[in-house]
Image (cartoon, rainbow, N blue to C red):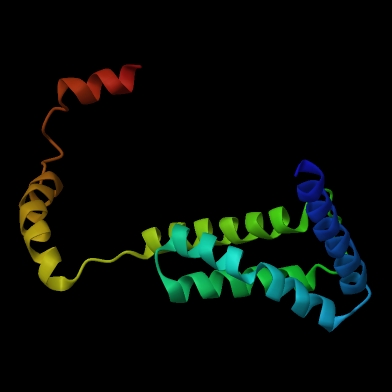
Length: 143
């Protein structure tokens, strides 16, 4: 049983080596075969990380576009599948970070926040310059 499993893995690695060799020499068929071979695994990972099918498809697409552009400089030391999974995972994480930065609050949701924040901010801005600084401010300046 072990011989059969390792033989299957060796065949896959050999196929990947040939596909990469062909891809680096400009074969579109090789790139298509790589995509077809790993698309399901890559989409599954992206969907798990992004929790959105459309975003997952975009992440996989962007990873493959980047992969296709790297044909001349690609130096693969591990497995092709591992490399592609890492590319997709990094792309998905970058998308999640960008999404978190872009999260906005609607005007209706922001109104209570502004009304709680605004009076305190206005009071801070109206501090008189002739007033002595607080102890904490003086301690901070001396440190």
